[in-house]
Picture 1 (cartoon, rainbow, N blue to C red):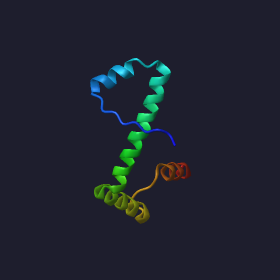
Picture 2 (picture 1 turned 45 degrees about the vertical axis):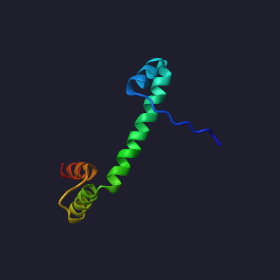
Picture 3 (picture 1 turned 135 degrees about the vertical axis):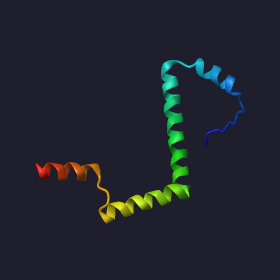
Length: 81
């Protein structure tokens, strides 16, 4: 089992530590942070009542024919020519 260490650092100390990394390490850190942000935002969307209601409304528009996907629009436009 890997060891887990929790640290409390000031943002300034963290920035200094990041500054000491080479470019490859900074990119790895960036990828890690972006993935964690994506996961956190997705979790918020899944739990957000307004977002869920909006998704349901848009799905209803598609099923009622009030909206079309970009692929459907392009296909219909090509057929009209």
